[in-house]
Length: 290
Ligand code: PAF
Image (tube, rainbow, N blue to C red; front, side, top):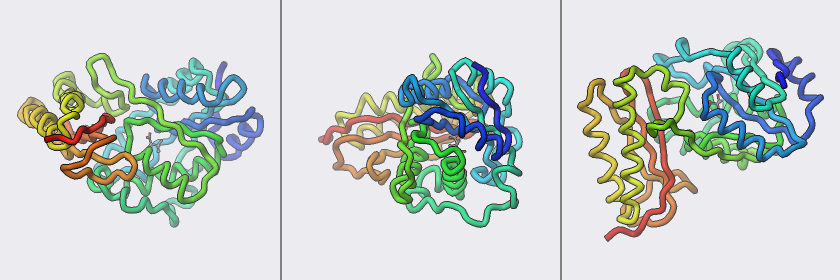
């Protein structure tokens, strides 16, 4: 089935009116890869046989800081539509910036609150304001019953859920598992920026997460002690992996867990290889340590 391609708000409204419920939205910035296929398959599980899938493809300038990769971010709409056709998507909504931000700079934006200033928010000021603003706009335009976000962007997922709860938005937010390539690298549209050697350096991220998870019984200190040396080793590789953070967070609050914490946690890592910023995370169950 070839999806309807809506390039304008009017086109989306016309397409939306024909869609059988429940409508499930998968927001993306395009350059679809097999991680997005996981999102789409999760979306199908939630929309069942009768429902319909909408994929948005929009490279949202509002969530890019100055000096980030807005200009070189891959734009592959024809291929994205072909992937959506293979995955049974009903509508691809691919507006340009004049449709989404007709007045140019947005006057009103979503404040992501304190969690939005931690981790990714600390390293990329304004990032989550931009993400939540466009997600809220997409929710208002598409009016989905369900929206699917990847667990790989765990802080984004947390903040979208927080926005839905705090602003009483009538959308069920569903998480899709992180897809990984065979070598362990979490799939990302930005992986395409990496050289072969850069990719080898980047693999330290998933190795650090696995080492941390294996040490989970020993508690927070043991996890960090297992993960950090792997990143330190990659810091002297060619090209070097420059770690931004390694953090253990309580998934219910996103607050950093203290030394005595036990229970569910998220081990989160972020780093740059050259100009390419990569993030990854792994859920684990922490023992109390010794
Ligand atoms: O995760 C992404 O691709 C983007 O942050 C999103 C949710 C599509 C908003 O632009």
